Length: 138
Image 1: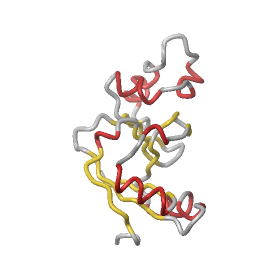
Image 2: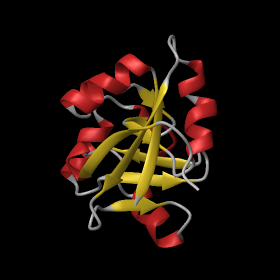
Image 3: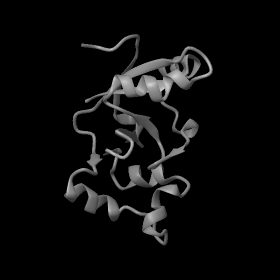
Image 4: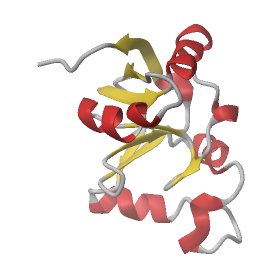
């Protein structure tokens, strides 16, 4: 699977050099994670173009056997709905601290969903390669 991540040039260079540091991730729609999209144009327009510098797009590939829940599939939605942290209301389950660690602990590497048109990665160990992508591939 090929995914893109839009960010600042400085952050992109840090990620290339040091890898994805989940401690630097902020909470998004599905909690703290490394947010990606299969759409180069979306990564550029929604993220890289808003950076403090000229921005950059990272292209990454993930392991073929990564456990990514696809919430467009009913069976994965059911599984996801059972993943909440004990005692946390279902509608707030991904806003708890360390939801990403909880997901990795129960064997979920990430989530794909249409709500943000992408994939959030909770387990950076599934990333096989990361490179700066200078332009959209045909």
